Every structure is written in C-alpha cells, then in structure tokens.
Length: 473
Image 1 (cartoon, rainbow, N blue to C red):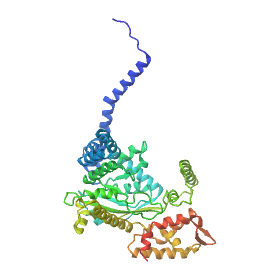
Image 2 (tube, rainbow, N blue to C red; image 1 turned 90 degrees about the vertical axis):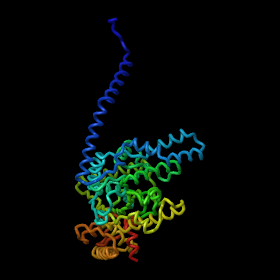
Image 3 (cartoon, rainbow, N blue to C red; image 1 turned 120 degrees about the vertical axis):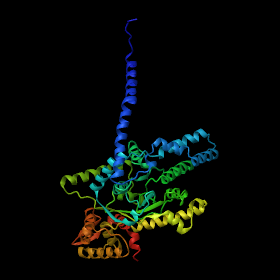
Image 4 (tube, one colour; image 1 turned 180 degrees about the vertical axis):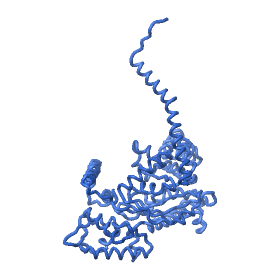
C-alpha cells in the first residue's frame, strides 16, 4: 500500500500541461478579464464625462450576443430558408454558413483599444507623415444634429490613410465604425481592426446569403445608432477623380429607414485631400496598362526601398513631411427631412423604384462630398501646369500669379481653399516645392516645367480638384 507509483515522462508532461491550462482558465483569465473590463469601464466613464461622447449600447454589446442576434434574426432566417431551397442544401449546412458569415462580419468594439491605443497611434502616425489640418466645418449645423441620431460620415477615398485621419480628427466627438475590405483579414491585423469597431465586407460578393447577412448587420447597427464611416466610391480612386458611387451599403441603410422612428439617419459629407498620397504610383499602375505591374515581390522591394530611402533622408536631416493633409466636414443631410420633402418612403418601394431613389440620394451625397474637398497647395499648382499647353515653362512669379488667380476664382465659386499661415504666396511655394522635390516639376534656366515622364502623376493631383475647376467654366 505504501509503494511508489512510477509514471512515464510523457504522461507527466501531459498532466502538467492540463494542470497549467486549468490554472490559467479558472484563476488567471478571470482576473485578467476583470482587470481589462475595469480599465475599459473607466475609459467609457471618462469619455462620457470629459468628451461628452455617448457610445451606443449596440456598440458595447458583447460580440457573441450580436452574433447570436444576427444569426436568429427573422430576415436572416428567411433568407437562409430561401437559399437552402434554391440551392438544394440541407438546413444545417446553410445555417453553418450563416454562422460563419456572422462571425466574419461582426466586430468586437473595445473602447480602451479605440480611445487609448487607436487614437494615439492614428494621431502620432498622421502627424508624423503630414501637417494635419481640420479645414472647413459647418459647426452650427453639426451642433444641431439631434443627439439620438444615427450618423454616417460619407467621404471620398484618396488613401488608406483616410481611415486613420478621419478617425483621429473625429475622436473627440464620436467613435467611428468602418466597413473594411478583405485586405484587412490577415492575422493579427483582423483582431485589432475588429477591436476598433470595424466590420469586414467582401467586395462584389455574388453570394446572396452573404449579402443578406451583411445587410441585416448594417441595418441593425444603423438602427442601433452606431456612428459609421462609408466610402460611397467603394474603393480608392485610381486616377484621383471622384468615382461613381456604389450603392450597396447606402441601399442597406435606406431600405429599412423608418422616418417615424426615434432615430433620424444623418449623412455628413466629408472631403479629404493630400499634398502627397502614399499609394499614388501604385494606384496609377492599376489604371495605366503601359506602366509595368509589380508582383508581391516587387511590391515588397518597393516598400522596403521607400522606407530605407526616407530613413536615410532623416539621418541626413533632409526629410520633410509630405505636405498637408486636410479634412472638411460639410452640412449634414437629414434623411427624415429628405423623405418629407420628396414624399418617398424607401420601405414601400419595389426594387427598381428603390434603386432609382437610392441612386438619387447617392448622387446628392457625391455632389456634397465634391463641394467640400479641400483645395491644397499641390493640387492647386498641379492644376496650373495641367491647364497649360505641354512644355510650357513658367517663371516663378508667373506661376504664382496664375495659381493665385485660380485660388481666388475657386473661393469665389464656393470652394474651400486651404491657405496655410493665411499666406497664399507661402501656400503656392509649398505646392511648388513638393512637386520639385519629387521631380514631377523640374526647373531649367529659371523656369519651371512639367516633367514629361511624370505627366500622369501631375494629372493625378490636379484631378483631386478637377470637378471644382470644371465648375468655373
């Protein structure tokens, strides 16, 4: 009875692993959850009192609860039944797919991650790269938005920096939920993005079941008052111009909009512009077949080369930030007022009629976005060169005169020209310096010429304000 019991080494190792797992699960993890939940609650209390931000209850709901709510939603269940009949699939297989889609889409917002990590990273990174400016805002109209409204920021899409820039500038008023593409579904990036409140969207998905699940999530979030940020263009502008809107997410929101409900649906047009877009040459390669395409290896080499080149410039003390990045916030558009003025109820329209009505709303919002795009120094100077005949040279004084005249014309037409230091001569000088540093404009014998090799890039920056310039004619 008192003899020794010997165990093989592998069994001891297995028992040790299970014992450690039990200790972590039942003793360590509950303490960690309590610690981080306490920190998150402190952040929520702080932003509620100091920043006067009301985070919607929907956004603070546990992710698993939202997944279950979406999974059991009546419209999702009906779409799943229809999908199973159409494709002759067993119900359990269809519902497994619904569950997978719900888990893929639904975010897991973490207020601590958003307002402590996300805000600080976005602020530091944006200010490190650019002179970040908040330009025009219709302050009175923004303050007049009813506090219980569902707010959707609709903006042009110039760069992947848009996500950081707008979230950083809006963080003292709200926390934004973005729709992000499949590029972000890589580990560990997807967990971070989910914690910041973003939800994943498969672009151009032909799966009607997936679209039904996504539609109901967007509608639930909108009805729950979650502030969202949407790019109507659906993707980055490859040529710098505003693209025609893709109406999927907009249609989802309007399809279930009830003008008699407690929450109004408010769209806020946002215009974004940069003196330098980090992805400009990559975007142009997608557009122009004559430019060589880079594979994954080529893209990696380009990124590393770009980083090392800028690091070398920093070491030499000759690195400059990439000019100005500016965001304008326009006049909010109330869908409750829009419905009343136009006598339309999106819920009662058939698919064709609703598509026409949503298209009209999309066109109106794109016009509103166009009108608040900032006119920045590089776009202004680039436009002067693009409007001139090829091989036209400008003395500096002549170039500044033409840029000054164009700026005044744009301002008279209602455009928002950002003038740093309230000095237009300085602003034009900044634009010219940015273009010459990148050899998009070259100086020869005291005159400035557009580089023949960089004409496409010059047009890219002029295109950012092309609709505003065309309106002058």
